[in-house]
Length: 213
Image (cartoon, rainbow, N blue to C red; front, side, top):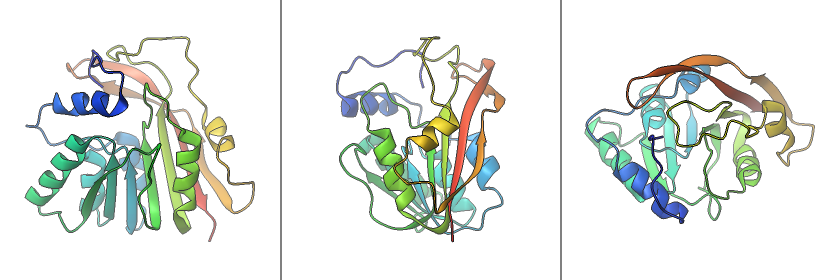
C-alpha cells in the first residue's frame, strides 16, 4: 500500500490508480509468509488471488509452479503478463482480470494463495475463500495471510479495527468440519519495510488449510 489512498469510490478505479502509480522499475518481491510456507511444497497448479504486481506469482513460477494470477486491476495483470514474458516465464504464469465479487477463475489447483486479500471496499471474502477452497484438489492447500495490525505507513490508521483471527477466518468458510485439516493457524510477528524504507514490527494472521486426500 502507498501512504495515501487514491480518491476513488469505485473499486476498479481505485485499484487501477494504485497500480498505475507504482514504479515499474523494480521487480516485485514475494510476500515473506508465502515463501516461508510454500518453499517445501511440491509444485503443481497454483492460484494467486489478488496478485497485484505479481511478486508471488513470479516466485511460484520460478519454483516450478504453473500459476493462474488474478486481480481486479487490468493494469496489474497486464504488467504481470509482460513481466513474466520478459523473464522467460510466460509458459508458467497466466494473468487474468477478475472482480472476485463477480467472477472466479476456472480450474482445479494444488495451492490457492490469498495474501493480504483485504480491501476498503465491500467484498464477499468468506464466499471467495470458500470457492477457492472448493477449487483445491485433494491434498491441496489454501494459504490465507492477512494483516493483523496497522503499519505506520498504511493509509488505514484505525487502531480499533478488528482483524479476523485465523480461527475466525476458518469459521467463516462454508466447508463443514470434515474433509479439511488446519495445518497452521497463527499470529506471528515480523519486521516489515514500508514504501519509504522505514521498518516496523507488524502482525500477520496466517491460516493454512489442507483439503484431505
